Amino acid sequence: MSTQLLLPNRYKKIGWIILVPSTILGLILAFNEFSYDWLHVRVFFIANDFRGDYNEYFGIRDTNITNTLIGAFFLIGAMLVSFTKEKNEDEFIAELRLTSLLWAVCVSYILLFIAFIFVYGNPFLDVMVYNMFTVLIIFISRFNYLLYKNSKIVSDEK
Image (tube, helix red, strand yellow):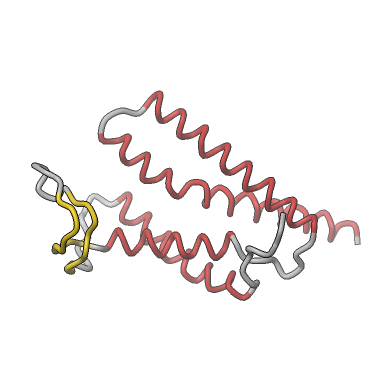
């Protein structure tokens, strides 16, 4: 795997600083029964069905952007964590990165397939929203687990 597309290692720390709080806030929003109206502002939209009667295209409206900002920060943080070089980026790390990415895509689509079969109606929309994040979450988890596991093996051999 070519490392030309990977960011320098210094961005990984920034990614974790963004990812951890946005994950915590996202989980609070996802599993809390209360609606958070932290940031209510006027935004430009490309497509909107706010009234439910008809679709609107290209306009400005007032809306709550709390979920939007938390989701955007999560994606930025996860992308920075996922796609930055390790301090010692070598062929072994590149292979771990590639297999972890392949594994994450496969698991994500298996979960999506299961959702297609067993989830219907509005809950399916929730599944699709969460599915946007699963590839990055699974990749970060798997890649860091393999790095940790292999670092233990290397340290045991010394």
